[in-house]
Length: 261
Image (tube, rainbow, N blue to C red; front, side):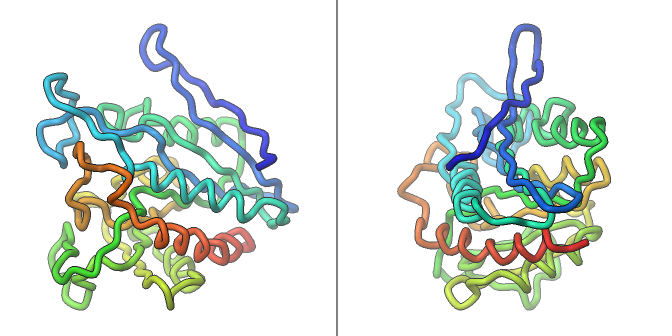
């Protein structure tokens, strides 16, 4: 696409090195807005929702939706935005080590990145991360929620969600209002306290630890997708037309967010 891509390499254990991949679209003014997605997949575990050490006797997941779909949408967004001249610099980052056993540890790629930015004195104005954005269904009662009092929320998993903790709720409302493809794919903004299980359960968590507003764009993962963290998370499960709609609809979202002072 013409971007210069650099590695942010760091040591994991001993001789093992891992890295985030970073590309930039320079802005005309100060500030850096990060758009990211993790490229690692979940290794074997006892159940799909367990976030513990890997179990060698079990199989891992190929990760088509989690998170091949997120990386694909990020790349498509980078393609659609190239040649534009945003007010803030847009930094596209493919993160390593989002999945366990590195989840919410000092080796989580997004946390390493956020801390590196702050150590370098960079002004990060916010972050939008993608995690599982490829599965949509019209089946009734296909959508569940990891929190009580869901009255009024959709029961069909046919929408894309903007999810955050309480802090960035104005950010997700702005993103939801700017989403440009609501006639083709509904969107929903949900801000929930971080104490609720499975909220800030992706790379957005890392940014919040450093005081940076962040939110996740998602199909809600296991709240809808039965192959989450399973060996059946394969390419034919994804709705590529809906993924393209997500990417197209996010162009005005990015334009709205990076134009903010």
